[in-house]
Length: 467
Image (cartoon, rainbow, N blue to C red; front, side):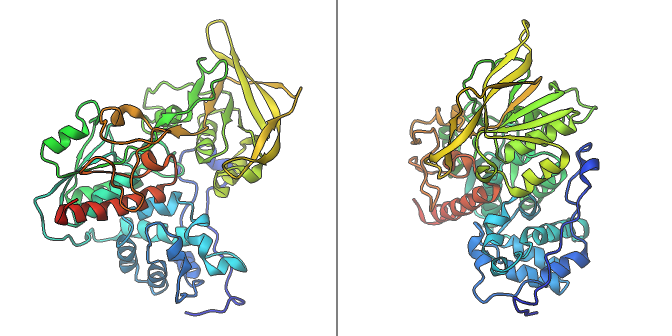
């Protein structure tokens, strides 16, 4: 099993749909490893005595153990090794930024390519879904404790899974008509098929988690009422779903969307499927403002919705772009254009309020700002105008105050996020925990899961020992 760094094989590329085909469909772009590819890639792992990859994983998945199981063909055991720490492996294998987490710590990456840990995790999860016998993780003896989990995104799903396995009674409250949170409404089908999320949620239901959809906590019921109704603890994982705009002229024109609204209509409401009569401006000339993963998702969705031209407008250079390299690479392959060092100044439209163009200005980079990235500075006299009948603003999101405004006992920071202990998830309200984007601001799926894991441990401790 051991190999020297000098003789290690090349990383096995993930098979993908060709760009000229996939840009016209919503099928998943990466096709997945075959068994032969998975075993070849897994054999590259040198089984370090002190695996840095595990240290780089926010939920501490025992990575070398599951990789060895793949090499030896013990796939059923391999997925159960992952389940010890990660209840959403099919999701994480697809959307987590492994390149800056587990794979970023792989020692093989110092002299070549790191082991494709994310691809291998996905392989096991997909194998289990296709070939598994449906057996579930073992649960602790049942308790009488009741826990309410508000929000069914990555942090909420993790808390629910961990606590139901510890024997507690868990109810998951979701505002939308389907559970999954951002995994369902925010990430496009071609990057994370909804059937994958639904399969992961079904496992929780089989374990005994009760799911209450179409329930807006903060309106239909508030956190205090949940505690008064007999829930012993409440976890808040409602994400950061409040769209941010740029506050420039013309943002109220027909055809200007927040990325949140655009992707929700396209994903959760299935605007991409002709069978669904979901209102959505399709757009011929599309401009997406922003440089993160959400911007890439919106641009690639617009392309698949039939746009003739899709442009990413980003005020910094490629080096400062926060999107995963894989996502920007896929977007470019599919025909999305990148207008870097450019920033919108205004949107213009017709007399009846429909978007027709966007005026931008060129930028240059100055000294680093608080984010550590070089600050964009406008270039005088550099304005230019482009035709545009659909604009999608993807410049971040904030904390929706719907729930938090109903609970004065929950202290917030100056951005409206919940103040919670980073080690435990405890808030300033007794019996209430929080984690994920509602605490940190918009971040990654796996970081939200890591926060959920810490909160679940703290909640279990509280339920058995007290605050």
